[in-house]
Image (tube, rainbow, N blue to C red; front, side):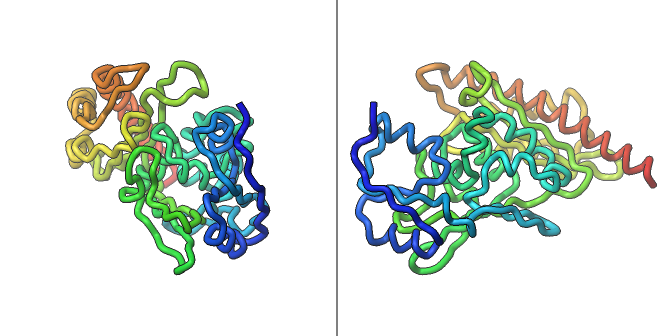
Length: 296
């Protein structure tokens, strides 16, 4: 199929894009187009005006700070994946972004486009939830920040008003020496995740877990943090029995089924994958601790 007729508008600045968005009826923003154009061609989405953000250079780039990094909405996913400073301080990002579509889609797709589209299986949404990210939105009344926990409103419906533009996202960094893991199960490489899981944890001097974050993607309307799993880990010395018990709490009641798999299947898969993810994250944390002691 072909997209319904629309008018194309090129925005050369954020201010110009904002003016177009408020003055044009039934307008949509074009970033990487990896999701929007397919939906327009299938006529799931019909627009009268398409506003191209690609020339807006002020929306692209990554800035690094002591406790976080700020990523512009028009930053290509490939640029994010290839950023060595991000990989050095937050290696889970490179691991997770490798699951995003294929090379071609990562070359074109943007960080902001993925977050605004809010597909439940989006890896970037999972990373945002895992790091308690903040989303920056720009509108006619100025800018506002939305915590990632409040960003999903419903299925593929983010907290973005019709006259607002997602401009940046702030990802919080975890301390040096943390353990991490990100993995997915999909029917084919590059397909949407049936279940995806990300884990972060830190160890104290005695080897007990003193901080943990676990998230599921592809299982609900948005990324699903698992506070019950995280609470079971805190203060505990890691072992196989602990991770097996904690993973049972990953059988979350909000996990849903679809035309391909049942909710029970997803819950079973989530439990297995959380256990494996925590095991690997712990091994990496131990390796980091041993390397630190070796250098002292």
